[in-house]
Image 1 (tube, rainbow, N blue to C red):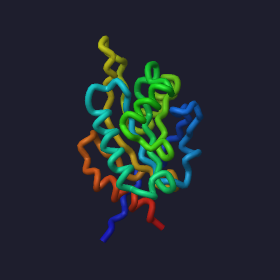
Image 2: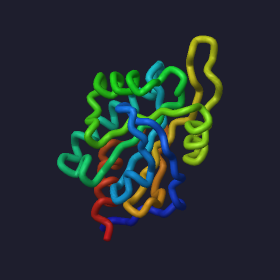
Image 3: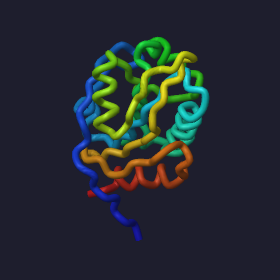
Length: 170
């Protein structure tokens, strides 16, 4: 028996620049189930693990990916993660850009988006590392946040099931 995911409140709006230089907002993705994650391309550990896990789920979703489900990865390092850098990162990790947007913008817009989703960004260290907590948020077709996965150790099959459960919700 499928159990409906809880509702956590309306998802905060954002409007940032994609890997293709196009503005993407939460509203522009309306009608799809969305997974929003926060990463950066120079991250030495968890960000590439999280992105690779999302790539495996993207592939497991089959035709639902990009038609019914969209992924959004927002950089926490907008000074270095330009659209071109994000596009190269996405391609290297196998992200399907037909349904996955990698977003950047000015620092204030990125920080505001991150805080809206419960992600805190600390200033970069001398070696360029950007400390941030790792949360991946699922948003239903109506723009309501439904679940947050903490870190990158969540079960990709559960993630896939939750996404498809939201796709199939009445």
